[in-house]
Length: 58
Image (cartoon, rainbow, N blue to C red; front, side, top):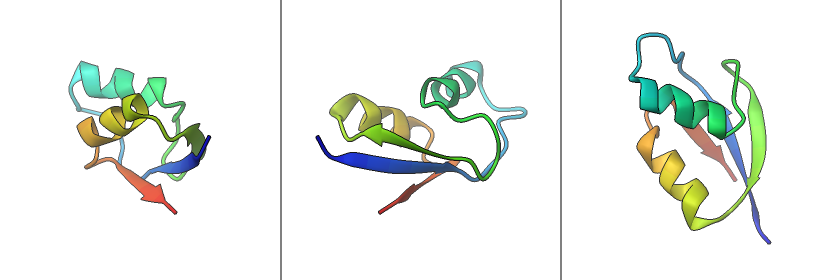
C-alpha cells in the first residue's frame, strides 16, 4: 500500500475540538513533526478536514 507523509505546520491551540482530535488521530503532536500513514480514503478525508494545519510531503 502507498504511504503518505504528513507534516504539522500550525498549532492546534484555539482550534475546534474535532480538528484537534483529528490531528491527534493522524499521530501528530508537535509543530514540524512528520508522520507516515497509509494513503487511504479515510486518511485523505482527515487531511482534507485539517488542511490549513498540515502539509502533505511527496
